Length: 225
Ligand code: ADE
Image 1 (tube, rainbow, N blue to C red):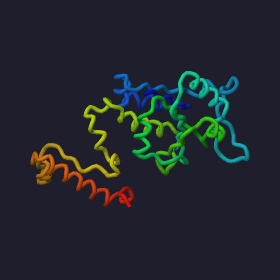
Image 2: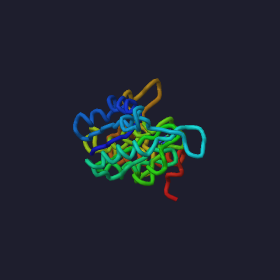
Image 3: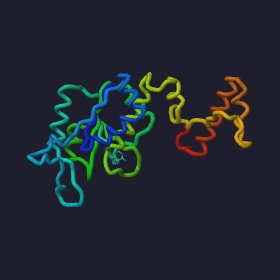
Image 4: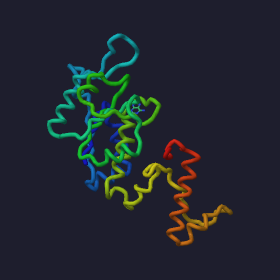
């Protein structure tokens, strides 16, 4: 899989990818991630990439020409499954959409800044608009990093234990059950006996029960109606 990311602060994203689980995936050639600085595509000697909005109002807007130039240059080399714009007014990200995106061959992500991007970029180039939650970040970079991390960890081979990603919270519309490791007894706080029974069927039943219990208590909206 290849992920191209357009940003006017690529250092923010590169820093994240040089540390995380994504770094291992890149080093193992399971994914190729490239950030593309918008600035060199800016207009004029000052490489202008943003301007005041028509109609007045606070905040700068990323201009269409630099974005169009860079997007077109990337599209000449690569056919993208999706051109994603990270924005708080996009569709809220969930595990189902991450699963779907993880099957893509090539993705292009666009990070907004300031007041956002010229609406015509969205109309002409963007195929999917994604929000990572109902709050506003100062730019799309952190959102792109979140989305990339969520996608990359699903690529086979990225997580050592392949089944691990399948038992994550949300994969079956249930939150994950509690997990424990040694010691079996910490100052009287004990690990449930059943997990040490060695009986796989009983353990699976217990985990499912706890998942349902936890989902009912914390996220009843996830349960089937
Ligand atoms: N850019 C700013 N806020 C965002 C959010 N919540 N999700 C995605 N992109 C954003």
